[in-house]
Image (cartoon, rainbow, N blue to C red; front, side, top):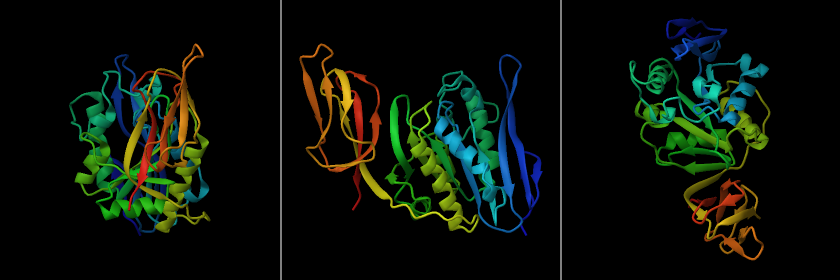
Length: 316
């Protein structure tokens, strides 16, 4: 039987499902903001998995993925192991519908954090102190930025075999080799020997049901691989992306996308056109490599040099 786990002085015994509070933080209005953490702690030993979302307050697709996961009956009745689910890490920015915290900081650049630092630093510190030590691995859910639509993808470091093995179990349509960035949850977790994969899908403040469904199914496949749940899901073929490049606007005007997000394109293929709003000029956007479209810019009005189409190049 598993042992009782403790998160910030709150105990969860074997066989218990609890929603506890990571910590509370006071706003300038004297309002206390709490970060809820949902814990499913089965009686039988197994891995402890973290599913987290809402690191940025406008990334609604990830929040919906974690919400759907914790609402499933088979997840509420885990066969073994433990699930720690945080649907909204950045409660404050979620309230404002913004990416950044009120002081302008990006929470995912505040790690490992400090107990007495800025708001973002305190939240990062609590995650590192109370959550990271008790998990074995996790997935942190994100979306593209404003008007950037990312095709469902997992980001990990190919040099670490354990990361790739976890990504293959999750089996997102695209698995992208992505180096660590300073100050991120993923980097600081790796330093502690706790692999965190980053899932990206859709764009901010807009539900993308392909991205949501792929995220939910990936979580279930990952848990099924460790016998935590019993679900019947087909294996999803994944493409490993080793390199990437952006196709940029060759002129200013109105951008029309011709290719489908996620599609494989060949060098020389027509990806889109930029039209002069006065009707007398049309510039073609041509692929300069063979690769997969891993993200697109949905903004219709673009300026010369803007990043339009993100292309991923398959590894050897």
